[in-house]
Image (cartoon, one colour):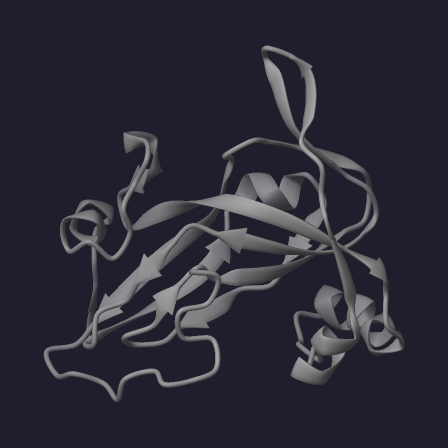
Length: 176
């Protein structure tokens, strides 16, 4: 088992980059495409605030179905400040398309700049043969500004010489 350098992730077309700045020595940075805010936090999210701070996950599929999500509006202050203001709350961030190979899996983790903004994202695994636009749950404690097309997450890819069982779950082809 070995990890792929950022250049190799792009060469194998796991991610199509928009900007060469996305290529890192041992990862590729993913650009977000959409941000949705939970406008009514279902009760099942309340224990999640503490859990996310303790790095545990209690967020379930049923809770997600109960949530009411609203697209976050693009804010244009001037030509230099185009992006999104996020107030305290939970958000689902949709990232750019990923096409994982059958012999690889990925770990999606936030860039350190995201945590410096006091936004608390959850890391996740991208399964072998997954194809879609991953969604990540983020809790924002204090209001922050995120520039349009910001690079928010790293995708680190590990590969084996053998193929893994392909991902056949409900999120295959997510947001495509």
